[in-house]
Amino acid sequence: MGDPDLYCHKGGALNRILEPHVVTIHKTETGFGFNVRGQVSEGGNLKSINGELYAPLQHISAVLPGGAAEVAGVFRGDRILEVNGVSVEGSTHKQVVDLIKSGGDSLTLTVISLPASEVDRLEPPETGPVQYVDYSEKRSLPITVPDYRHVQEAGEKFVVFNVFMAGRHLCSRRYREFVDLHNCLKREFVG
Image (cartoon, rainbow, N blue to C red; front, side, top):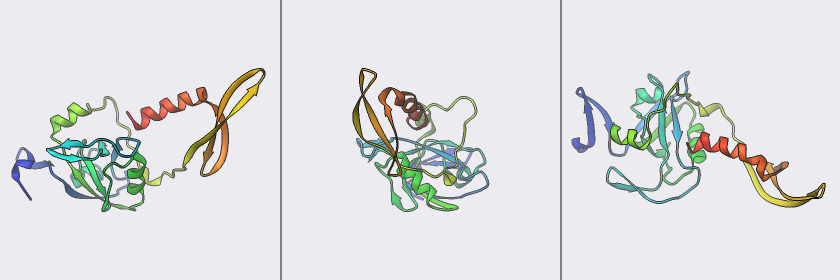
């Protein structure tokens, strides 16, 4: 199994594998039993993980105790290198979630674990109950804001943005109407 110095031992049991390794997760009634968090845009600067350079990676932000991911050997803080054989280095959160959702009831991840102390330093444990999201049953629709137009109404001039969902015009809104939605999405996906 490689260099024994790359593994953390706790009470004689093998825990975090600090080099890339494959885990297979079989979905249960509680789903895959983990949440993913990470960047929302593609690309980014290379980062060192356990002495190797990687493009930005999505990571496991929560693992359901006793759930499918924990049984398979996934840990909070694990960085995801591949989903079902597809490299996800530098991928967006949505791209990774879509790959996870497309795999059916079995999921194969290539991950690299970090030492527990490093995980807690980079992302302190969440306080209160953690909400686990099963992404497999959710459907996403692309929402775009491809253009804008100038409007004059009641003597006031302003810009409205045209919002499209799945390629069809949904509505036109002023920027200030997006602020609450933007803040909510940042909290949900960026942290």
